[in-house]
Amino acid sequence: MSFPNGATDGQLYTTALGTIYQYSAARTAWLILGGGTIGPAGQTGVMGQTGLMFAPVTGIQGQTGVQGSQGNPGSAPIAFVLFPDSVACYAATGTVGVIIPAGMTGKQLSEVMFGTDTPGTGGSMTANVRKASSGTHVNMLTSDISLSSGSYKTNSASISSSNKTIAGGDMVFVDITGVNTTPANGASLTMMFQ
Image 1 (cartoon, helix red, strand yellow):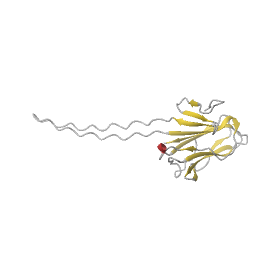
Image 2 (cartoon, one colour):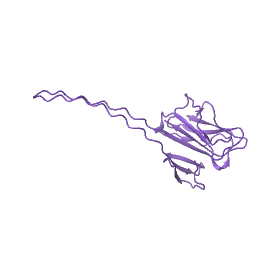
Image 3 (cartoon, helix red, strand yellow):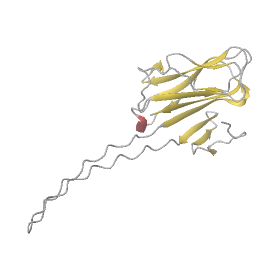
Image 4 (tube, rainbow, N blue to C red):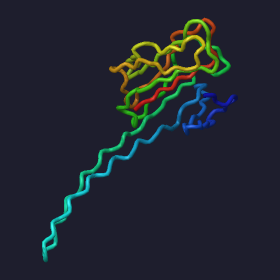
């Protein structure tokens, strides 16, 4: 995904899938404002039985059906633009995090997509997702996600079962743990929570 060049603070950008980003000059990054899909509606409850009818007595009304279960609340993406398209990537510990809103409490990391606009060559570019909860930092992946030489994207991530759940007030960071021999230009990472 490519964002507009020469962005100004507060500028909005909407992707073809309807995800909305806002440029933050203070963070020199595009931050996600909204998007994601709405979960399906729950099933209709079972219809109550029809009452019995005797002449001249009116039958008893059937019971109200049980309410259907609530639909899946949908997924929520968090995206990081790690390096603009014109900048060569380098290893760095993420210093700008995204704070998790209370409405995402209990959601779990379900997918990670890591990519670049111009692939690097030789070796791999690697990254990990770090969660900070009340000052305690843990990796959300059991091993680094790796973008091999010449590759544009990957979603082959090993998610930690013990560190994948988020809560309101947590912060999420991305650390670039390694780069190609000839580094890629531009990089982004998107996390999906369900």
